[in-house]
Every structure is written in C-alpha cells, then in structure tokens.
Image (cartoon, rainbow, N blue to C red; front, top):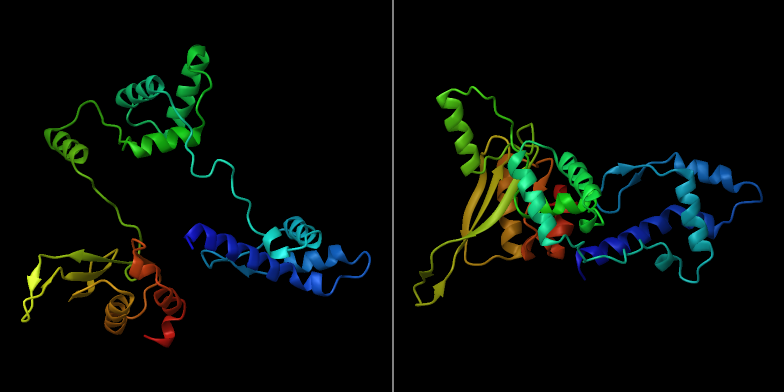
Length: 272
C-alpha cells in the first residue's frame, strides 16, 4: 500500500473517530447542534502529520451526515481522489518559451508576478488561449530550476560581482531549522566495494546522522546493508549520544518506511 492510500485510510478512520459517538448514540431532537459545537471545541491529532488541529462545527456536521447516509461509513468518510490525480496540465512549447524569456529578463520576479504577466500576455495573444493557472506556472518553473534570484544593484563592487557569479554557478542552501537539536538529517551513502575474509564482495553503506543547524555528526557508522534493523541500531546510537531531536528528516527509503521503523519512531521513549 502506497502512502497516499494509507493517508486515505487514516483520514477515514480519524473522521469516524470524531463522529462515531454521534452515530452510536444519536442525539435527541434539537440537540445535534450542541453536540457538534462540543466536538468543534476539542483539539485532535492530525491523522497525517500528528499536529494538534481543530475543525469547525459545519465540517464535522458534513462528516456526520455523510456517514449517516452511507452503508459503509468508513469508505464514505475517505477523502475524494481528484479526477486529475497524476496528470499534469500541458503548456505549449511556444508558451514555455515565452515564460523562459520572461524569466531571463526578470529573474528576480516572484512566481506570482510571472504568472500574472504570462496571463496578461495570453490575454493580448488569443492564439495561446487558455492561460495557465498559477499552480501550473509554479510547477513548470520549479521543474526547470527557474527559481527567483536576488536583484542586484547596478553599481556593484568587484567583490559583489564575484559573489553574485558564485551564487549563479552553485547551489547555496540555508538552514531548515533555527535551533540546534531541532532537526536531524539522516541518509545512507554507498561506499566502494570491499571483499571480506571469505572472498565475498560487498557494497558497504555509511549511515550518517547530522544536526541541521550546527552540522554536528550525531552518529556515523558503516554497515554491510541498508535495513530497518541497521537504521534502528544507528538511530539508537545517536539517541544515546545526543538525546532525542525535535524532528527527523529522511529521504523515505525502504528502511525509513518500514513498519518497525515507523512504530519505533512513534514511541522513541521506549527504545532510547
């Protein structure tokens, strides 16, 4: 089961848990509004990201009637899948060329400004109709690396010019987190092939766990494979050395998505 399907199930189960009491014990006549108001005042754990959220009474009421009028309440409460899921809105090569020329001329414009000006261009040139939406322009520019660049002063010093050229040629990343220990990154890196004492060849994997802000290496260790057991061992070593971070970022590899890893991270205090 892929992540999107699991999210659908999580949302359906979550919604049923919110309104399930109303289905099991239907409120008396003219009491439904009061019960919905009580539910709207409560805080709930988001079914996907785990944060605390609230929902309006009208939203909960919509869930209630959707489940009440269905033979299968869980399925009825699942999120509807968009009819255009997995499809992309096409932009003609000619219109993409116009967008590219616009980006070359004004690289410091925001995505919204590019979208608005492209819509104005299409309005003046009906042969390009219909104009692309902002979301389409945003996706096309991000896919091609057409990111917003800093505007430069006209009278730049030689040092400023060299710095601007460096930014053009290299990717310079900022910090994801403002505080030490707030976010860790981890990933496996494949090393050169080695042979063991039995003559068997291996491609060793180095598990590296870094603190995002200070770039401290919380733990690094070589392993012969990339499994959930190996990941759990490396994370445990980092936890014992540095404690528990506020959040953890991975590339969602097989070891990271394993059920053992997900359940372990949901209750890190049981293992750290």
